Length: 63
Image (spheres, rainbow, N blue to C red):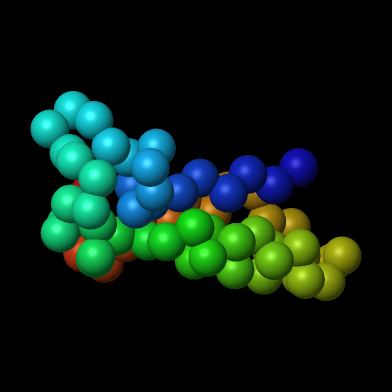
């Protein structure tokens, strides 16, 4: 089993708790496409490679 666990992603699901739609901070966050690329990359690993968890953070987001 593999889990891809993204931190903040600049989508409508990130709105709330002080954030509004089109918040300029979202420009530095990961996009849904970034997460999709991580999922595809995980699925393309050879069967001999075991990936359990990929934790993804945007370079512009505080951990």
